[in-house]
Image (cartoon, rainbow, N blue to C red):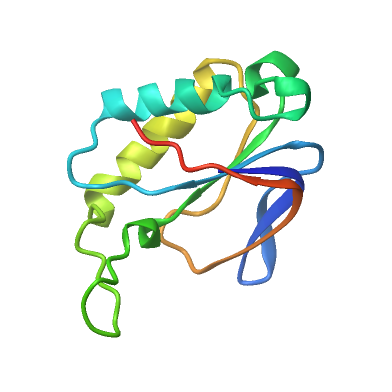
Length: 137
Protein backbone atom coordinates (compact mmCIF):
# COMPACT_ATOMS: atom_id res chain seq x y z
CA UNK A 1 0.00 0.00 0.00
CA UNK A 2 1.35 3.41 -0.92
CA UNK A 3 0.36 6.86 0.20
CA UNK A 4 -0.08 8.97 -2.94
CA UNK A 5 -1.22 12.38 -4.10
CA UNK A 6 -2.63 10.93 -7.35
CA UNK A 7 -2.61 7.67 -9.30
CA UNK A 8 -3.97 6.06 -12.44
CA UNK A 9 -4.05 2.63 -14.01
CA UNK A 10 -4.20 2.15 -17.77
CA UNK A 11 -5.05 -0.89 -19.86
CA UNK A 12 -4.09 -0.67 -23.53
CA UNK A 13 -3.47 3.05 -23.08
CA UNK A 14 -6.92 3.80 -21.67
CA UNK A 15 -7.39 4.98 -18.07
CA UNK A 16 -9.58 2.41 -16.31
CA UNK A 17 -9.21 3.70 -12.74
CA UNK A 18 -7.74 6.77 -11.10
CA UNK A 19 -7.68 8.98 -8.04
CA UNK A 20 -6.86 12.67 -8.30
CA UNK A 21 -6.38 13.69 -4.69
CA UNK A 22 -4.37 12.33 -1.73
CA UNK A 23 -5.21 8.72 -0.99
CA UNK A 24 -3.87 5.18 -1.17
CA UNK A 25 -2.80 2.77 -3.88
CA UNK A 26 -3.36 -0.79 -2.71
CA UNK A 27 -1.47 -3.51 -4.56
CA UNK A 28 -3.45 -6.57 -3.50
CA UNK A 29 -1.94 -10.04 -3.58
CA UNK A 30 -4.05 -13.11 -2.80
CA UNK A 31 -2.64 -16.42 -1.60
CA UNK A 32 -4.14 -19.91 -1.28
CA UNK A 33 -5.30 -19.60 2.33
CA UNK A 34 -7.15 -16.33 1.89
CA UNK A 35 -10.93 -16.21 2.33
CA UNK A 36 -13.72 -13.62 2.03
CA UNK A 37 -13.38 -13.09 5.80
CA UNK A 38 -9.66 -12.34 5.39
CA UNK A 39 -10.46 -9.93 2.53
CA UNK A 40 -12.95 -8.04 4.70
CA UNK A 41 -10.54 -7.91 7.65
CA UNK A 42 -7.75 -6.54 5.47
CA UNK A 43 -10.06 -3.97 3.89
CA UNK A 44 -11.06 -2.72 7.33
CA UNK A 45 -7.41 -2.63 8.42
CA UNK A 46 -6.28 -0.73 5.31
CA UNK A 47 -9.10 1.81 5.61
CA UNK A 48 -8.37 2.49 9.29
CA UNK A 49 -4.57 2.41 9.26
CA UNK A 50 -3.24 5.79 10.41
CA UNK A 51 -0.68 6.45 7.67
CA UNK A 52 -1.94 9.64 6.09
CA UNK A 53 -0.76 13.11 7.07
CA UNK A 54 -1.20 14.02 10.74
CA UNK A 55 -1.59 10.32 11.58
CA UNK A 56 -5.05 10.15 10.07
CA UNK A 57 -6.67 7.18 8.36
CA UNK A 58 -8.37 7.01 4.99
CA UNK A 59 -11.70 6.53 6.76
CA UNK A 60 -11.20 9.69 8.83
CA UNK A 61 -10.46 11.95 5.88
CA UNK A 62 -12.43 10.21 3.14
CA UNK A 63 -9.30 9.43 1.14
CA UNK A 64 -9.87 7.57 -2.12
CA UNK A 65 -8.19 4.25 -2.93
CA UNK A 66 -6.98 2.70 -6.16
CA UNK A 67 -6.92 -1.10 -5.78
CA UNK A 68 -4.79 -3.11 -8.22
CA UNK A 69 -4.53 -6.91 -8.28
CA UNK A 70 -0.87 -7.90 -7.96
CA UNK A 71 -0.13 -11.64 -7.89
CA UNK A 72 3.60 -10.96 -8.25
CA UNK A 73 3.71 -9.84 -4.61
CA UNK A 74 3.93 -13.56 -3.86
CA UNK A 75 6.99 -14.04 -6.06
CA UNK A 76 9.55 -16.44 -4.61
CA UNK A 77 13.19 -15.76 -5.49
CA UNK A 78 15.22 -17.91 -3.08
CA UNK A 79 16.24 -20.44 -5.73
CA UNK A 80 17.59 -19.88 -9.20
CA UNK A 81 17.25 -16.83 -11.36
CA UNK A 82 13.57 -17.08 -12.21
CA UNK A 83 10.88 -16.16 -9.70
CA UNK A 84 8.03 -18.54 -9.11
CA UNK A 85 4.53 -17.46 -8.17
CA UNK A 86 3.21 -20.72 -6.75
CA UNK A 87 2.24 -18.97 -3.48
CA UNK A 88 -0.17 -16.73 -5.41
CA UNK A 89 -3.73 -18.00 -5.65
CA UNK A 90 -4.87 -18.83 -9.21
CA UNK A 91 -7.17 -16.36 -10.96
CA UNK A 92 -10.45 -18.22 -10.32
CA UNK A 93 -9.67 -18.12 -6.56
CA UNK A 94 -8.05 -14.69 -6.43
CA UNK A 95 -10.51 -12.64 -8.51
CA UNK A 96 -13.54 -13.16 -6.21
CA UNK A 97 -11.35 -12.24 -3.21
CA UNK A 98 -10.11 -9.11 -4.99
CA UNK A 99 -13.77 -8.21 -5.64
CA UNK A 100 -14.65 -8.98 -1.99
CA UNK A 101 -11.83 -6.71 -0.77
CA UNK A 102 -13.05 -3.82 -2.95
CA UNK A 103 -16.68 -4.44 -1.99
CA UNK A 104 -15.78 -4.38 1.72
CA UNK A 105 -14.05 -1.01 1.26
CA UNK A 106 -17.07 0.36 -0.60
CA UNK A 107 -19.50 -1.00 2.01
CA UNK A 108 -17.52 0.94 4.60
CA UNK A 109 -17.99 4.15 2.59
CA UNK A 110 -14.67 4.27 0.73
CA UNK A 111 -14.31 5.74 -2.73
CA UNK A 112 -12.66 2.90 -4.66
CA UNK A 113 -11.15 2.97 -8.13
CA UNK A 114 -10.00 -0.35 -9.58
CA UNK A 115 -7.62 -1.83 -12.03
CA UNK A 116 -8.71 -4.71 -14.28
CA UNK A 117 -8.08 -8.10 -12.73
CA UNK A 118 -5.61 -10.14 -14.76
CA UNK A 119 -4.92 -7.41 -17.31
CA UNK A 120 -1.52 -6.08 -18.29
CA UNK A 121 -1.78 -2.74 -16.48
CA UNK A 122 0.39 0.37 -16.46
CA UNK A 123 0.17 1.98 -13.02
CA UNK A 124 1.39 5.54 -12.54
CA UNK A 125 1.43 7.33 -9.23
CA UNK A 126 2.89 10.26 -7.38
CA UNK A 127 4.10 9.14 -3.96
CA UNK A 128 3.29 11.25 -0.94
CA UNK A 129 6.24 10.85 1.34
CA UNK A 130 7.17 8.33 -0.01
CA UNK A 131 5.33 5.99 2.30
CA UNK A 132 4.90 2.31 1.40
CA UNK A 133 3.52 -0.19 3.92
CA UNK A 134 3.10 -3.95 3.72
CA UNK A 135 -0.18 -4.88 5.38
CA UNK A 136 -0.79 -8.47 6.39
CA UNK A 137 -3.51 -10.17 8.33
